Length: 246
Image 1: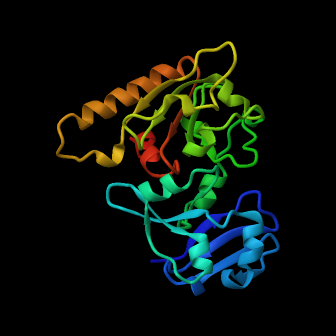
Image 2 (image 1 turned 90 degrees about the vertical axis):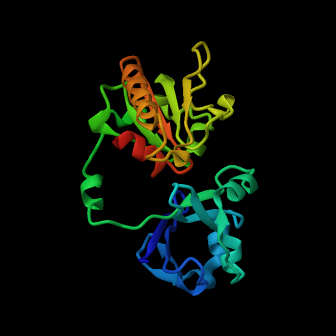
């Protein structure tokens, strides 16, 4: 299966959590800023000082793109079980209780070299998880953003790029509550438009899939002429990335 890596953002001196087998608590390791590595079971209390014990970590995905989670407190209790996306999202009523593991790739060093020239608008402060896609952005305030859902549901006065948000594309729900998008809520400006498609429900043999995606791409392009577009799913790394990469 390979090692999974979870970034522990803003949890210094903790840097990341590494997972060998999601159902084997002894395979979980914590990596510190210093590079030191310790078994999660030995330092779980220290981890829970920085990360809520009720946090769910995505460790896999179903074929339709939906996430499969484990709960960190269950790992600490040595009884981890797989939790489906709907259950994890429903149980996560407080903010920032969903984290996402990924497998390191040989291309990571290439991605790190990609930068956006207007980083003053996007400092990516604490508890934000988004990236500007520089090669698809048209200018300083015309950025294409890949984001998780949590980021877009916060008021982010320091992340000034969202002052220019004109369109949100939700890739994991068909009928979301549009009022939850606080990142683009700027006094005196209309809220961003919202397009929504549960992409994991699409199938290649379904009629209209190509037309649906074409409509999304056209809407993104038209909105970029006027401002910034944010494309998101739950984590912002699979369903949303699929739409952006189309």
